[in-house]
Image (cartoon, rainbow, N blue to C red; front, top):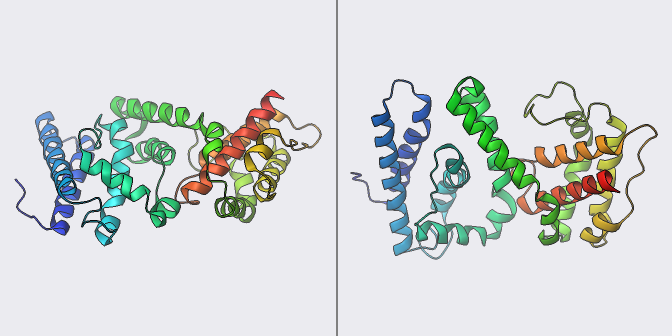
Length: 290
């Protein structure tokens, strides 16, 4: 049983138990009994945190955000989205204190508008982490977890266009999204058209549509900066005119690849990513269908 009771000590206990549990699957010297014991110890620490948050909260030390919340949020956020995929463990299930804490964090703008990771990014990177650090497809249990993560990420990506309807389309998110597209334009075009991708190689690239990709990205930036209703502009405005010989299918593929490659908060805040993904996915849908 844990002996430390202060918030900082409890955080350390939880982190230690969490890493011991999460990385147990990669340690071939452990028995199944060892792994089960680490899971029990981890869940006990999660329950301990939940009890503290239920008794107090909604933030870790009471009614206001403090440094303790900043300390615990990166690991809790990662476990929230990745453990259901890798360990069939939902840290929110039956834990009202942790649920209320996440709700409070999501209502805290400096977190939710700038540094919060989103469900898609954590899900997509989970597969990438497993490919790089988990043993890859050579291990059957890792291959199954990769496939599950990829499937979940693809499912989330299918909702990008629909999420534009509810995205924060204010000037701030639109400008940040457009600025990222403009200032990283050459690198983004290269990434979504190169024949030898450096990462997330399972995402198809539009290798023969460099000029078309350039046009689509410029058009997406113009939609974001137009000052018009972004949903109306993306859904009903004019489509980009592609260079002669470049297919709409390839341009749509590139737009989807850029949307999927966006990582929050690495590339931009969640509100900006939501509106940019929505614009790109909407344009891709229209390029394929109209």
